[in-house]
Length: 286
Image 1 (cartoon, rainbow, N blue to C red):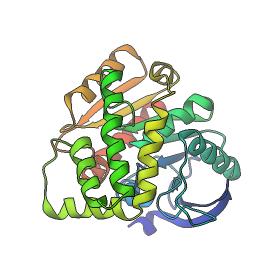
Image 2: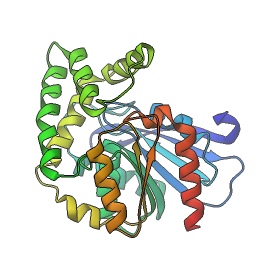
Image 3: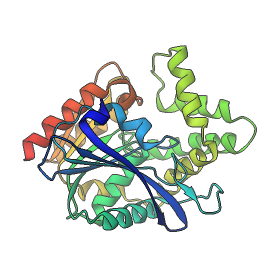
């Protein structure tokens, strides 16, 4: 279906010591020059995260899906799993969109990618138009101190991923980020395998967010955003819903939607609903 809707190409570009992979989709029907970049979460590849959503999008001529450092098909030139910061992830994206000569575009991010998308908007406010965030990192609890407390749990996961108990670390991660999930053995197995594919890259991504929490001013970050649609899984913790409801109340251009029947796995479990929300939000600002 994707090949019928889009001309799809995979590219590699040298960025800051990495062979950086991105997929570029050009619609075969849409000619409106609208463009959107989609950023994945920690430990997962871009196409794996977004493909079922992309094939249902109707408002963009161009769709860009990069693999962030340590994930997907992006590798360091040394082939080692090197640590990285959120600022370096933003730097990489800035170089990528400069290479593509994208001057202004819509931006969506899931989990880690949601945090990175907001940091990108903060640094390059005029480049980003409509924003979509799916359970963005560090916007996971109403109280900042509760969000910080989660970093200790994820630090344990990092240690497990780098040691001899990687599978247990992934399960602990899932239990923390999706404590109310409905466990289905086949889906659980798929999620664990997906996160273990590059377990050291996953560990570095979790550590990246933990380190970011030490210096990010969350209030300033939120204040720097523009027109945002935030999507939260209905089964995710109440405190996350409360925080995004609060943001929708205090920020006139922040809209919050709860996606029923899912949790942190929302892009995998509810692609049809998410794509419909993306399409309708885009139409509202056209």
